[in-house]
Image (cartoon, rainbow, N blue to C red; front, side, top):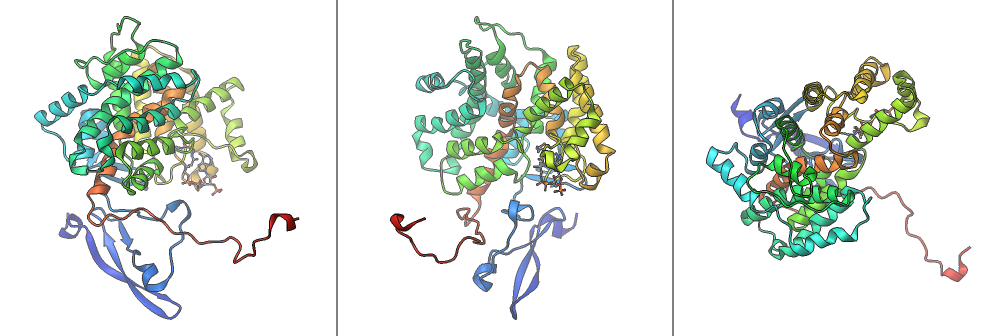
Length: 437
Ligand SMILES: CC(C)(COP(=O)(O)OP(=O)(O)OC[C@H]1O[C@@H](n2cnc3c(N)ncnc32)[C@H](O)[C@@H]1OP(=O)(O)O)[C@@H](O)C(=O)NCCC(=O)NCCS
């Protein structure tokens, strides 16, 4: 590694000519080979803004949390490859890595886990909020409502103080799984089960979800390990839609619960975290239609159909999503160990093969993403389909927190406020209502 790659910063400038004016803009280089033109002075120097719908070419911040190389299929958190974390780390350890910037020592990890274990419970009145929802209410709507409601029980969060945010952070990590499990039990009209602080994070979650009325649940280590790995694989992914939403909301100094609730809402959409649910629904539809994979691919390619191959394509990965490769292998392992045969897995593999050999997908560099296989494992673990995105949210929480924290620790932080190019009517006359036709 050269000194330049170790020390990110300005490495030169580019000259831009606009209407006869010449402006120099700094070129910023990160620790990997990514470079960006710093256009923060462009408007003040030239009155021009940049136009980048979907923000696909915009670096909204510098970040030391996650590196993604979409062409090579690389994903690393704080420098550590996702493949290594999935195999050797745990979800709580990876959460510590993301949020606090380093792999914890044994003592640090133990106290992180212990602090979390003290905060699983929900305030009594927060529990009552569940009664306001219908049994079939979408879990993500309840999740977002419950998380923003937490701010009302801990009003010191309104004075945003990132240096003293540890308590809010461990509370959120703990209460997320309690809320998720309560949402599930409410949908089944079953009594809530309180957490057992003596159990590990994932075991606790499974018990709060699936224990009988007496609280009995024997965790299958295969399930616990698989779910822990799924959480780990989802833990962060750079400036994606929900993480950018968390940063944007937090940049106004809104409290951490509000910022995370905003992230949950952004994750809900089928083009983002909702895709894992959409994949299973798609596979079931294909199956009900006779399982003709090629017919479905033709349907996707017919642009008038408006149908997408869910679980395929990614804004950043123009190669394999490394998480999808880990999950594809895990699908075989987990279903094998659990003795589950899911015809959707066979269908997914066929669909992947046909799509990867098809010009439409090759040309557009569309590969399976993290959602393509995760739903099949989640279903085998007994997680209901409409809770899949909640699982994604639990996994993504440490990433959201890490970005919220990193943003607030950035010197000279500004509120997020993109510009636009206005294309509506120019100055127009107000016509009184009686004169309008
Ligand atoms: C993830 C996603 C939103 C990324 O979108 P994007 O980077 O903005 O890509 P675009 O929407 O510009 O797509 C580029 C081209 O590929 C096509 N395309 C992208 N994803 C596709 C998919 N899953 N199925 C079929 N066609 C797809 C688009 O129609 C477009 O075609 P065109 O150039 O002929 O107009 C998109 O790939 C998608 O909707 N995937 C399915 C949902 C999903 O799995 N989301 C989870 C992401 S982790």
